[in-house]
Length: 238
Image (cartoon, rainbow, N blue to C red; front, side, top):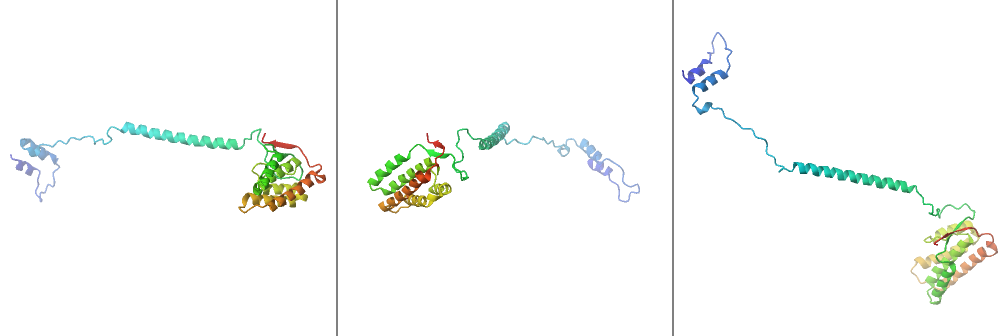
């Protein structure tokens, strides 16, 4: 029996009255392969399945360690930021015992404790002003004379002598506590501002106007009009 005969065994004529025969389709093929075992056509081809190539180069462990380090650094950074925020919030509510009170609190019309700067008393400011005036430096003379005026008024209890404070703040406070000398002090403060901020020449006439306004203010505050103005003082700069 040949291979062709074997193949024909599974065929049926189209008009076969018995219909299709239930037959394993692999049976004839296996039989044909057994009869023609020497034929390489029926020799099954073996396909060796291999694992997919690993292109990581053995760096899987190193990559995992790197990711872990990144996560730890991010967590440490977040913790540091949270700690800084909490610290700032806590410090906002803390006030040291030696910290001065608010120097620009609203005035209630009553003379209380005044702020005095003892680092340079008024007489030293006036000595410096006299030296500048003698040398013709009237700009510097007015600057120093104004600081002496503020120092005397602070000691009289009508302004606070706060380093770095503006003349506008001092004018507002004096207008509240000594309104009777406020116009003269305003003139002295305006001359001081011109000498401090303007680039124009400061003349001896301006210096004389300042000293006249200063004399009126001090004469009223420290003279008969100033009786009873002195109060306790908070000294700064010591």
